[in-house]
Structures are given as structure tokens and as C-alpha cells.
Image 1 (cartoon, rainbow, N blue to C red):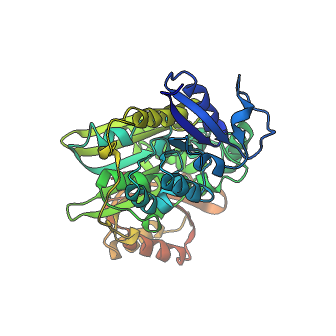
Image 2: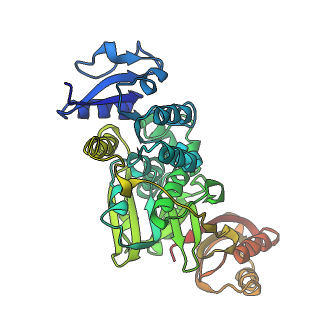
Length: 424
């Protein structure tokens, strides 16, 4: 027992339970204290020692015996203060907290450096998919310049079901909530916040420059229609919520989250239901895609325990452990505003089936230096209305927004149904 590394857990929910169960099979690891919100809650864990359970998380971070603290409760507070207290008390940190890292990662990493402690966070980006360790080690010789990722299982599940069944967003959301794939309040997932937190940290690590969350463009999936799914399929695409980050030769970063039409020939187009995937583009490796379960008890526990074992393997061997895994980014990335980005676009409009309607659309695009790659008019519906679907060539976002404003004020256009960016 004296040689075992002492570990404290903050949180014993889905992930915490998986971590506890997994660590029981590690001979030189001993969980000595676990903080929970409700000590009286029934838990599906065999042989759980009730004597190590506390409802005061500060008992964990202030325990002088504990060497590693795993924070698994999520959110900013009290996690932020608990982690800082633990670091000040000489403990290394493992966390799955994507929101905290996106909002306060820079401060926490600086604080850890001050006290010569490490923070590992493999589980905070894509659950069970290994990303941070490979980027920091095996891929360290690469210059990664682009990331395309599906980082939220809830939204991917909803979009997949909409695609397969032709169902509406609201109907699929209700089903996802019944099955436990979506929260009662799904805003964090469906409006893209969760994916934005993750791509902020991932881009910071991959580009070796600080990415500020407030500069990350975010757009959710709530406006996607079954008709958009059908049209995308007919044109050779799938619609996915994509977390994207790209850095140009001048060191300017374009980081965003929004729905995107992905070509069916691309790996991300075939990532369905709750699976996550990340495509990394760099030199000299080229393009690689990693996919797997992005959440869940044991997939996420796999990443958490992997980080714990990485720290355990170094304790007592060096005064400065895991130098490659430490974050010491010294410069902020210059961020490109979404209005200045260049994209291709899918546009769907409903219009009166009158002479010259398509001409109005073409003129609006011509005036804003936008070329059309394809244009399709669907069958005429009630009241002599038609749905017109357009794919543009690459153009400036601000020019496309000008076109949308023109169309909204055109009396022959009944509605601008959708504007979705298309994979470049």
C-alpha cells in the first residue's frame, strides 16, 4: 500500500463511476477519497467503500496524502477554484472539463507551471478518442494547419436521424431526449457551445497559439430542415455540425462551429449517430482521421485513466514531469472574423413562380461578386410557389450576407429558408 499512488476523484457520475471501476484493476493506484454532491445517492458500483465518500470537495484537494486529483464534475465553478487549490497544494490534475479549459485554460496552465504541476485533459475534447497525447508526441514533428471535426454526439445523432428518417428537428430532438442522448435543456449541444469549447482547446494545442473562445464563431443546428437533408443528399453531400479550425501562412486562425455540407467522398460524411471524429491536416503527415465514441462511461474513463497512468509513471522519477504535455503557449493567434472568411454556400429560397425570379437571384449574386456552381428549382407547390436551391462558388462571407439581405427584401422571394456553408 505504501508504494501506491494516491488519487482523489471529484465527481462520481457517469464518467467518475467509469474511472473508479477502471482504476480498481490498476495495482499501483489507490483512490483514497471521492467527493460527490449527494452522499445518499444509490450508485451502481460494486464494493464501493462508503468511508472514502465525502460531500465536501475541498477535503479532496486539501488532503496531503493525495497526489493526483481527477476533476469530473464539469462547469466553471466550483471546478476552477478546486483545481487551483489542488495545484497550490502540490497535486497534479486530470480533467474532462471542456468548458473550464476553453474559458480559463490559459490561467490554469500558467498556474500549474508556477507550482510545477501538470494538467492533463485528454477526455475533454473527444471522449475516448486519443487526440492530445498523439498531437503532443507522435505528431509533434508536424505542422498541423487544419482541423475538421464532429465533436458533439447529441447533434450528430439528431442530424443522422433527420437524414435517415426525413424527420423534423423538433421530432428527433424529442426522441433523443427520451433516449437520454439529449439533455432536457439541450442548448449547450444544439447551439454549438459544447463543440466550440472543444475546438478552442484543440486548436490551441494543434496550432501552438492561444485561441480565445470569444473569437470563435458559433452556429447551431436548430434551423436545419428535412428538405435541406434531402437536397444535400441529391447533390452528393451530408449535413454535419462541424468544428473547424484553420491557420494560414501568416499565422491567422479561422476557428468556428456551424452546420456544413460535407462531400460524401469524405470520411466525416459517414460518421453517424453519437460517434465523434477528428480529421487533422498537416505536414508531413498529410490527412488523418481519428474516430470513436465521444462520450459515455467507459470511453471517457479510458482517456481519464490514461492521463492518470501517464502522471503515475513519472512521479518520483523527475522534478519536472511530462514536459512535452505542458502548455506554454506564449502568443495569441490573430483571429479571422467570420465576415472575412471565404466559403461555398448552399442557399434554399421559396419564391413565387414568376418570370425573372432566378434572374433576381443571379443579379444579386453578380453584384456581390458571387458565381453560382449549380441551381435547382423544385416542383411547384401550393399557391404557385417553388423552392430554389443554389450552391455557390467560393466567395466572401460578407458578400453572401449582402445577397441574403437583398433576397429578404425582394417581393418575389417569399422566404430565405436556409443558408449553410459547404465544405471547401
